[in-house]
Length: 299
Image (cartoon, rainbow, N blue to C red):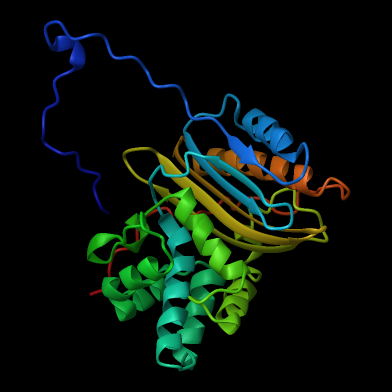
């Protein structure tokens, strides 16, 4: 297992420097929303903030609803270890690369992609990561304008550094016509994200009304610093809305604590966007997290 090492440099506290003024703590980041629909931004800001009240750890949120031109952000540029959320990027890179040579995925690639997304298979991900190489992954990230996403080194794809802003850019490519991914590629990605096994459909789908189509990819990982990273990205369509949600967290004491934090945010968002349909708790978190450790590169 990879150790979380610290740099050996020594920092001198400000207070130890003669004559230095005491450091003033920066104000905590706050939820910021805008919307073309009257009153919606204020409601989302209030309800997401309330959902996060007294929650421990660091939480980043991204929301975009294409229908009402609504955007919400919280710590959109804060960086997190990706865990298995990066698997959506791996699939997008595979399809983007195939498009450049106008070829379809092989049967082997299709099988690996299906396992990687629907059951979050680590071995399949490692195989595709090695096949693509970080060069192609970096080229895709550049094409997608995901400028702050940094692929994990030495095959450790689960330690790719991501932020909510870039994950929202990725979801935008999945959900609207663009020059990076073909329409067929987008449909294929959403199809697989819509077939994730039930035990992994927690997180951003929580509270989604039954008439809303759900596409999700989650990730979870425990390390010696920042406790559990628990993330969920999702695309949703229905109830008169077309929206994407990214919630990234670390500093959680347990996996389920992080899941509960994400689901509190998700429930608030679904309720505010689709209030005409009573929301239901459709999924529960798995009690057997199989992605608890960063995948070790194959020999």
